[in-house]
Image 1 (cartoon, rainbow, N blue to C red):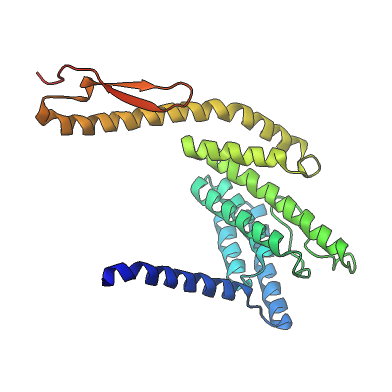
Image 2 (cartoon, rainbow, N blue to C red; image 1 turned 30 degrees about the horizontal axis):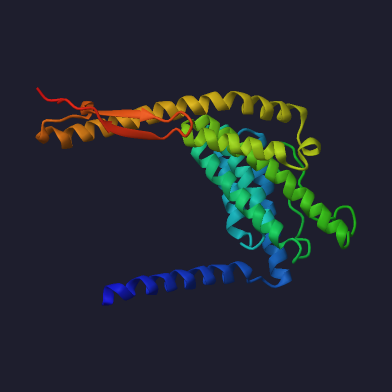
Length: 276
């Protein structure tokens, strides 16, 4: 009986942990303390940007990590900028998995920032994003902006960083290769091409990359799917032969038929014995 009760207790514990994490995310520092933390984070980020520009990508990652460590965890937009920058560093280092992970974290933070943007006032301005793109989160440098102007500016910034993070993740996924990653890259490039701000945000070079990759990745993904499917069937065949051998049978005793419309396979007994 105790074992039956364990599931609900574990589910309840998971709910409590999720609520605690959400509460920690929502708890905010006093304005002066938050401003000091953001300023400290921006200082580390500026140093990281300089290191990136000098080609010192490992050192830049360390500095971005320091910027993350002191930044309040509820400033989702600022977190997204840092994660996107870290993804850019990993791309330069050809560390594809790490680039995917950080770009994904950036996109997740942007989703939260977008959901919360209508509930919050503007955060303190973020520093430049790497590779020369200016990311302005507030209007302090240009004077006070109120109401819709602030909201519009924040939405523009979110769209800009989302495009960068998608480009970086798509590139890393395509470099990683494999059916799953290539399909993921295709989805990222499709998301980019369908962004309402695609024409205004993307450079001519980036637009060309998106259109080219959407064209060349499809056959690569299909080839990877066929290769991985063949490898999977080979492993299943070896396993099946081991199971069927005591019965004087082998997988050759069965016939696999592929439905070209659905891609599904069916198995029929073909008769005969695979053992001699």
